[in-house]
Length: 107
Image 1 (cartoon, rainbow, N blue to C red):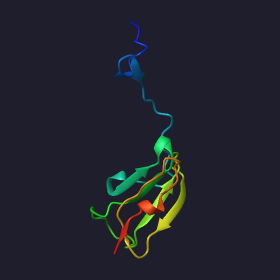
Image 2 (image 1 turned 30 degrees about the vertical axis):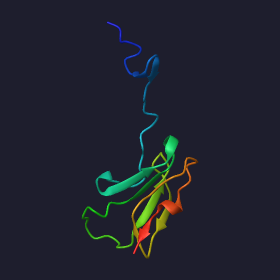
Image 3 (image 1 turned 90 degrees about the vertical axis):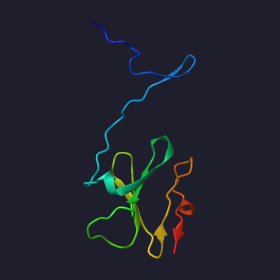
Image 4 (image 1 turned 90 degrees about the horizontal axis):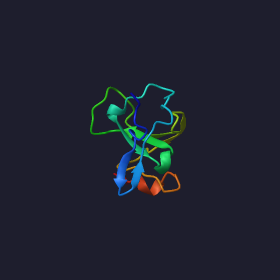
């Protein structure tokens, strides 16, 4: 019995198909649970910005909101602290640049 070659392709429109496949698995350098985090992923598989979801309670941590930025491979490349305000939203440009103007801080 042979497998169909097109089994993992999906129809997008008339005579137009696409398929998704895993390029590699994220190998986080540290133990990360996405259950208590908000993620913003840059377009086209770029960097990943993570911050704690303030609507969910967690055990003792710093009161200062911070954002960690990771490569798609899971290696952390940067960290941003927002010392005076609450982070409301994260975002990226189409060029995979982290948008400081999309970090909306409210006092």
